[in-house]
Length: 168
Image (tube, rainbow, N blue to C red; front, side):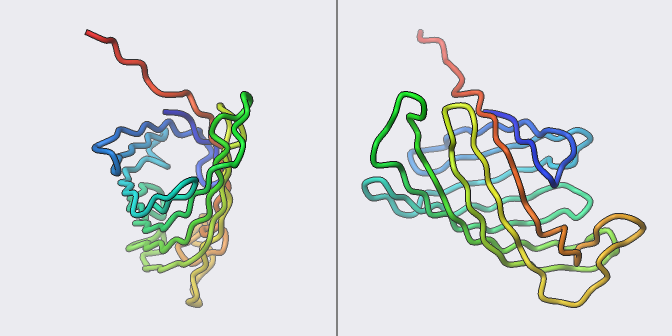
């Protein structure tokens, strides 16, 4: 559970994840006013030692709402410290489908991202997803589904930690 501060959403988004099994979890995000709200499903595909691969499917509600398909490659640090017991970094490859953007068009984007957990409380992710079509970069003052700025992603995560369940 935590908050995300991002370039894409001016207002912080609160998010929570719930494990559906050993290798699958479901996430939900709520943004105010709805921008940044979404749902996603993660599935671990491969795990060995300090490395694991995850496939993520997501839907994001925004002016340019999208379906995202991301293949993540995570790697844990060799040494765990008290300051950062997680020590995780990741790269990802994303395909983003915007079925109907602000100008009414469709956009398919491809790109890469990089993220890192900086401490027990903080992490970041940065990426760019490019649309190879020639479209209108803006529509009535908003970045359209074809705009380069629509493909930029810069996020800062504040982790709140796992919820504590009462033992019966």
